[in-house]
Length: 96
Image 1 (cartoon, rainbow, N blue to C red):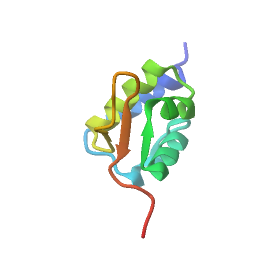
Image 2 (image 1 turned 60 degrees about the horizontal axis):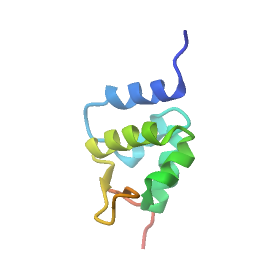
Image 3 (image 1 turned 90 degrees about the horizontal axis):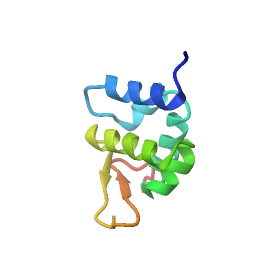
C-alpha cells in the first residue's frame, strides 16, 4: 500500500529535528514546497489559505502548520481567534 501525500509530508517534517529555514523549502516534496513558497511570500496568512494551497483537509493542514510552528518557520499570530488561526512566517520574502 502506498503512502498518501499527507503521510509523506508528515514524515518529511517529523524527520527534521532542527529549525526549518526558508532556504530548506526546496528540499520538500509537493504540495508542501509550493504551499510554503506561497505563504512565505505572503508573510501573514490564515489556516484556510494554507489548507487551499496544500489541498489537504483542514485538520491535516492544521497538523502540518503546528509542526512548522514547532520548527520555528511560522508563529501563531496574535490576531487568531475561535473562527480562524492566523500565522506569520518568521522570515518574509519581501525586502525593502
